[in-house]
Structures are given as structure tokens and as C-alpha cells.
Image 1 (cartoon, helix red, strand yellow):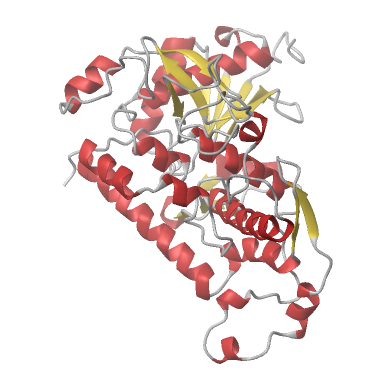
Image 2: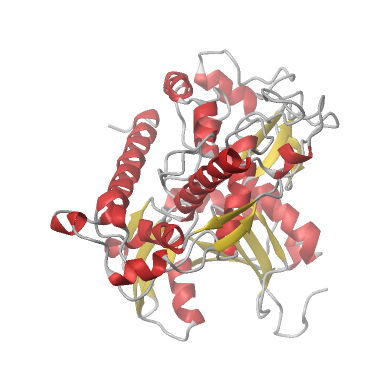
Length: 436
């Protein structure tokens, strides 16, 4: 039921499709009615790339014919909860793919095109077993991201398919929680402040042609953030899942030339937390002589799997691992829980500086009294999906936030590495689009 309607008061639907989650609800309410992950699993008609299906994204070298043959393959089956279980009755994920309409590098609803050779080179360089085993040294590249795993599979990137997923997300929100027809309510879509006109045009075509919305308005996220606190001028810092954006707003308008974006976001924090949890689990396994076939913290689905069930590629008895990117996504899920409940990450006040970020003479000196106090403070306990409890020191928790605020050392190196990798992917996107 809509909160109110009639006369001049007719509620609008507010929607935001982010890199981590999608929110939809009625204007005037305090919270969204529909909230779900933007990363979903789907299965094409006739099978997909993941196996068993005869999908068209396989061995053909002609990307144009590939795109044409796949443009009409709509996802007829979609799952929004695939972290804790396999998607088929036998526990496998055959024929299933992972989709996210938001590009990780740009943060826009855009589907970059990659050549099969570049995707194959990424696949050759990625060692899944090594990525999953983390050594606890805080290396943010120790876990394979789901975007990298997707791009390691030739044929999974289809130009323009992100708008098909965008349309299905709108349909899911309308049908599952709002219980209203898109043609009966205007839509306010929250977009990125740097969203270019061609992408806006494709989005508005989807809204009008496929959902028959009576009216729509594109609101910039930075302006909405200022209005939410009763201001029309300010500097908005948005730390999102795939990156951080700093946007200046003046009198309700975004100053486009002043927008800055960094690829360092919550996703990198979750990878770092996962690496630390793997290291703590490995140490506790050696000290307590735990009976586990793996040296990394297993996700919930892997703990539940019994012998003879589950996905593909696992080693060990009764704890078979699913294929990528499902395995890495499931592991990042409990890293997210550790961050959100405060045990995996925290902010150290009173001038905290990570030992990894100290340079020059400061690195050779004894740790400060403030650091010693945090090092000796009580540890935070976190229970892994298999029931093992690990104790996370306060300094390890604060090192996660120093990834954003650290002035030098490993934190600065991690940010520079992320920026370099993002630039390479942007260059690949420009080259694949034929722009000189």
C-alpha cells in the first residue's frame, strides 16, 4: 500500500542502484521498502558460461556476432541470495553467472567491453587457490574480487546487458516490496554526480519504454546528500563500495570540474579484513590443531556442505568449494559482517598511526605510547562461519581504516596501486570502445 495518494499529493518512487546495493521506496518515508544486493546471480535461457548450457559466449572470436547472439538472451532465472548455498538442487552453480549493472571502476551503470585476449590473460595470472589462502599481512590484493573473476571468464561481458539487469532490478523492487505498477507512480532516480548524458539517455529509455513510468527525474546523489541535512552548499564525501567520491555542491548545483574519485572503497577494506581473518584462522588452526582441510576461513556454504555434495573444484572431505566468483563472494560476505559489527574494523582516535605507514626516522623509533595502549587493549572477538572464534587486536582493526586515512607506507602504496589498476582498466575500456 502506498502511504498516501489523492488530489495533488501523489507519492513518487525513489530508487538508487549502487555498486553494493539497490534501494527503492516511496518519497516521504524514512527508509527504503526494497533493499537488495546489486550483485545477483542469473541463468540464461539455454545455459550460460559457467557450464552445462550451450550459451553463446564461448569460443567465437567475433565479438560483434557474440554480442548480437547474446543480446536477446534474457535472464529467465535470477537469485538474490546465493551466498550461503548452491543455486542448483545438487548444490552446484552450473549455468549461473554473476551480474552487477554498476561498473566497479567508474561507478556508473555501464558495461565495458573487453577483448577475449585481455580476459584470458587475467585468467592466466589469477591463481584461485593462492588468492583464497590469505596470509594475514594486510595485503589488499590477497582476495580475488568478483569483477576480476567475472572478467576471467570469456563471454560473460556483453555490451549493453547492464541495462537489462537495471530493468530487472526495477521490476523486482516494484513487485517484491512496493506492490505498485510502474505506470502509476513517477520515479525519482538517484544518479552519480558525474553521470554522462549517453548513460542517462539509455537509463531513461529503459524507464519509459520498458516500465511506462508517467514521469521521471534524475537527482544527483551529492545534491540529495546536501538537501538531507538542510543545506544547499557543501562538500560531499561519499565512501562507497567500489570507490570514494568527493563532490563540491554550490547552491544546489554540482561543480563538475571539482569532482574527484578514488578507487579505494569498502570493497578494498573487506578484502583486507578477509586477509587478516585468514591469517588469524591459520595461526589458531596451528596452535589448537583444528581439524580443517583448508588454511583459510571457510564461508557458510562450505561449512554446511557434506561429503559428496556442493560445488566444483574443492579439495578436502565434505567441504567442497564452489567455482569463482561465487566462492570469493561468499567469503567476502562474512568479512562484511565483521566490518559492520565493529569487530573487523574501527577508527583509532588520539593520533593513531599504523606501524606499516611510518617512514624515515619514525619507522626506526619505538612505537608511541598511544600505539602501545591500543596494542595492549582488549581484543575484539569474531566468530567465523565454522564456529571458530578469533581475537582481533585493536591495532589490526584500526589498520583497516588507515587504508583510507594513512599518510604513507603500505596504506599509500595500496591506494596508488588501486589507482594504477583502475587507470589500466579505464584505458582498456577506452581502447575497446574504439576511441583514440
